Length: 75
Length: 359
Image (cartoon, rainbow over all chains, first blue to last red; front, top):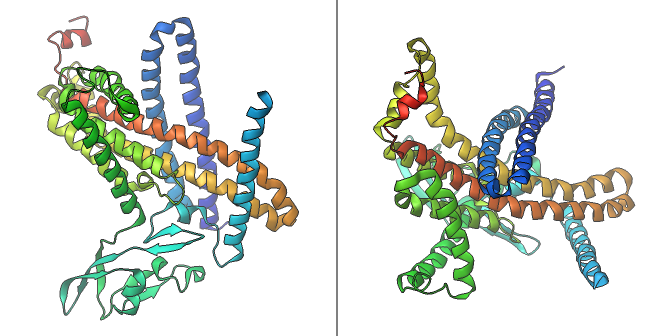
C-alpha cells in the first residue's frame, strides 16, 4: 500500500478509536452521575458541575487524538 | 390542538427541504461546488450566495530584496491582482479565476511576510465584539443607575442577561475561585458572552463562526493562560516546581509533567472550542451533501428521496449546535475559572498535613 493510503487508513481507524474511547469514558461518567442525582436530587447541581468538568477533560484528550487524525488525513 | 402542533413543524420541514434542495441545486448547477471544509474555514470574502460574494480588504506586509519591508493595502483581492500587479496561483483548477481564493504573491520577486488581510472570521469576531459591547454598556448603565440592584431588573433584555450573569457569578466564579472571584469576574463574563455571541453568529444565515478559527480560540486561551500565571500564588509555583508530600525520587518525573501541564491546559481549551464549533458545521454540510451524493449515484429521484431525511437530520444537528454553543461557552468559562482558581487560591495551613495523614 502507498504511504498516503496508510495515512488515510490510520486517520479513519484512529477517529473511530477516539470516538470509542471518548464514548466509553463519558458513558461511564454520565451513568453514575445520573444515578447519583436520581438518588440525591438536592446534590444534582454539584454532580452536574463536576460531571461537566470531567467530561470536558475526557473530551480534551479525545480531541488531541482527533487533531492527530486530521493531520494524518490532510497530509 | 394536537393536529395544529403536528402540522406546523411538518410544514416547516417540507418548506426547508424544498429551499435546501432548490438552492443547493442552483449552487451545484453553476460552477460552484459544495465543499463542507471550504465553508467552515476562513476566507477573504463574505459569502452571501446566491446573492453574491463580498470581497474583503487585503493588507500585506511584503519583503523584497531591493525594497526591503513594505505595506500594501488593497480594497479587494481583485484589486490586488489587477492594480497591484500581484500574481495569483490556485491550489486546484476549480477555483481558477476567483482571485479571492488564490495565493497572492507580490510583483518584483518579493514575498508576503505577514498577511494581515481582514478575513471573514475577523469581521464576525468584530461583529461579536460590537454586539457584546453595545449590550453590556447598556446593561452596565442600568445597574449603575440602580435598576436591578435596588429594584427588580427591568425589561426583557436585562432579565434575560441577568440570569446568565448570575450563572457565571454564582455557579462558576464563586465556587471555583473563592474569595478573589470578583477580580476575575469581568474576564469570565467577557469570555463567556463573547464566545456565546460568536458561536450563535455562526448559526445565523450568511454568518461565519469566529470561534471555529483556531487563532481566535488560541488567543482566548492565551488570556486564561496569562491570567493564571500572573495570578499564581507561591503555593501554586511550589506545587509545580517542588511538589510537596511526594517522595524525592518521584519528583524528577513529576516536575516535568507539572510544567507540561501548565501549557496543555490552555492548549486543550483552545482545541476544544475550535473542534466543537467546526465539527457541528461540517456535520450539517455533510448531511446536506448526502443529497448530491445520492443524486449523482442513483439519479435525481434518489436525491429528492433522501432530501427530507437529510434536512430533518441537519435540523436536528442544527438544534444540537444551538445547545453546543451554550455548553462550549459554559465549559470554556468554567475551566478558565477552575484553572485560575487552582492558581490563586490560598491554601489552608492544614493542607500539607491533609496530604500525608501519617505525618
